[in-house]
Length: 357
Picture 1 (cartoon, rainbow, N blue to C red):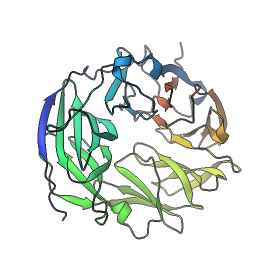
Picture 2: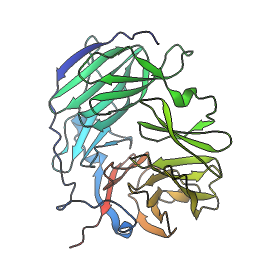
Picture 3: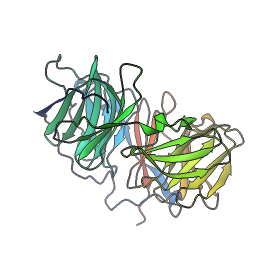
Picture 4: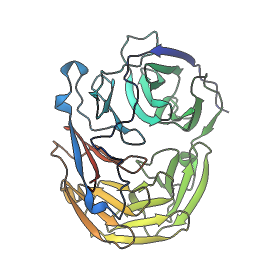
């Protein structure tokens, strides 16, 4: 067992707008993006960082977090403050969760995620770290982490943390922290990073899942909170990137040589080629909630969205994204499958399925 990390709990009051659902520019319930309606996926809203009030600070990075239904978005300004956005109120004033004893400025923002208890954020402040769970007009801070968080998520009434020890020798580990209580000393090794058979780990996979690949192309799906493999399959090639559905069942991926886009069902082990790429590099990939559509952004360096039906292989040209000064920083689909959001240096663009009159 790793040594107990000194932690104290502080509840502070912040002035936030409460998280209330918004229609995100649609009057009726938004449709889940699927193969049946993918031709109707289109941009419904552009959020310009240049329109943020000057006293809210500059936002120049397209990183963002989405609430499960896509109705709220969190971004970070250059001062490491959190700005929340919704379609009704726009951006609310920046939030600065800070532990007592500092200089009243937030540390370096590391990661954040929405959950049932609000928004959880992880910061590094000099030689220590802290977390904040923000909801409504209050925030629960846990201060004094001796190691550094690299990823945060919210399983029910807990926060999960992937931690990187400062000593450079101790392996990465997972800490599960009850919200509103002192952190437990019980931690476990970050199993995907400790597995001697793991050749690489696929990036941009949302916790509690992690995906690793062995040298002989055996793919493994891990549960970070338990440190166990709960699914595996044999692939024909080494993946270069991929995306997992929220329930962890379907995995869309491209091989490292960009020869094709593939679809894997972890439940049955079935894997098949969806479409050839013939060397065209795609930097971003998402898969719909039902696993029936794979979407890519900026394939071949073009500012376009392309989608494939994962069963028929039919290709859809969905149009150009908004103009940016560089390639997007992040592309995500909300957990409920209704919104696709693209973030870049200029702002955010929200895509949804067109409502049929």
